[in-house]
Image 1: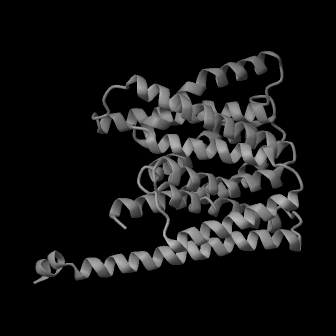
Image 2: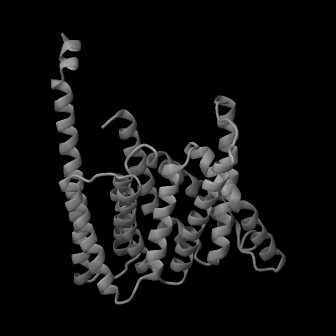
Length: 307
C-alpha cells in the first residue's frame, strides 16, 4: 500500500473510532429534542469549519475559485448527510437504537456495492468472502428484527451515497465539508431562532452544561467527518466499507457493558458473522501488503538501486 493509502487507512480508522463512541456523547443531553440537536450540530459545525478554513487559507492560498459543479456536488452531499443526521438523531431519541445499529452494519455493504458498480473496484477472493460473511450476518440480524428496517435502510443508503459523492468531489475535505455544512447553515439557524422565539429552545434555557455540550457538538461532528472525507479520497470505497464495521462494534460494547442493554444468544450469531468478516478482511490485507513489499524488494529496479 502506498504512503497515501496508509494515511487514508488511518484516517478512516480514526473517523470510525470516534463515530463508535458517539452514543456516550449524545446520551449526555437526551432531554433536547432531536430536531434541535440536529440544528445545533449543523450551526456549530459550520462555525468550527469556517474558523479552520480561514486559518488554513492563510497558510495555503492554492484553493482556487468554486465552480458550479462544486456547488451542485456538495449540495447533494449536504442533502444526504443532513438526512443521515436527522434519521440517526430521531431514531435514537425515539428508542430505535437497535435499528440504527443495524443501519451501520448495512452501510458497508452499500459502500462495497457502490464501489464495485460505480468505480469498477475489484474484490480479491478473500475480500469477497469477507463481504459475503458480513452480508450473511446482516441478513440474519434483519430476520431477527422481524420487519423491513426502514430506519436502518435510510441510514445505510444516505451515508453510503454521501460517501460516493465525496469520492467523486473535487475539493479537499476541509473546503468540501465547509461548503456542504454552509448549504445547511441558514435553514438550521432559522429553526433555532424560531424555536427560541416560541420559547421551545433548550439552548440558554436548561443550564450551562447543556449549552456547552450543544456548542461542542460542532467539534465532535467535524473531526470524524474531516477524517472520513480525507480517507474516502485516498483509499478504495470497498475498504472504506469494511472499516465501517469498527463503529457499530464499539457501539455494541458500549450498549452491553456501559448502557446495560440486553443481548440475546440469537443476536450473537449475527454479530459473530460480522466479526468473522472483519478478521478475514484484516488478515487478507496484512497478507497482501506483505506480498506487495516482497515483490517490490525483488523488482529489478529496486535491486539495482540497492547495489
